[in-house]
Length: 275
Image (tube, rainbow, N blue to C red; front, side, top):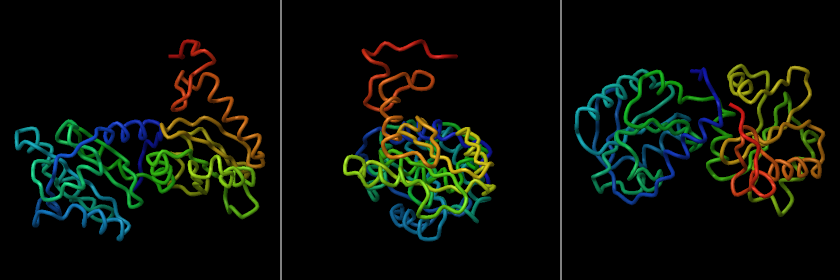
């Protein structure tokens, strides 16, 4: 199953917003296969089992059994019932105390309800759809492995060093590898590898405006907010990469958006963002 639009900045912003609300309201879960349900209290196990089986887990969070909740539950059950080859599904009532950990884990106690979250096998939230959604939107939550890996790193608040090259060996991207071994950056950086010949990654690479057709490796650096801040040649040194990152943090970023915790420009005086 392929995602037709893989814009990691939009995904990261959406999923971080969906999961940023701190909450302690307890929940209960009902595992679903199509529209059927089984006993409550299986949310944590469902997460574990989906990851173990290499499947996505779609979670339908709800609070009040009103018309909107029932309508969206029908859409959710129908869509996920057709995706059993790649995904499991559960329903979670956030007013029941039997599985408090999942609502705390994803911070959804104050989120608009109903809410559908899609969680990749690696634990990345690839989609958050509050209140109203359709089947196509649910299907688009199944993203490429590269997208999911980047999202997981960004949701862990790490700087992503995306290596785009076919047949990556130990000699490739030496400068970036040295950066991850520097004690200043080792805990806050994550390497992700993508083969540009992988058909499933093409939409993602296009969204990043990466062309590796010439066979040369490309390094893309992305912030936890999902903003690509630099596209650099494979043979860039550690110092050159640091210079690019420093420049990005002290000047206006694309569309006037800045790296987390950084001023957009010296003194905070930015040129108007392009529309």
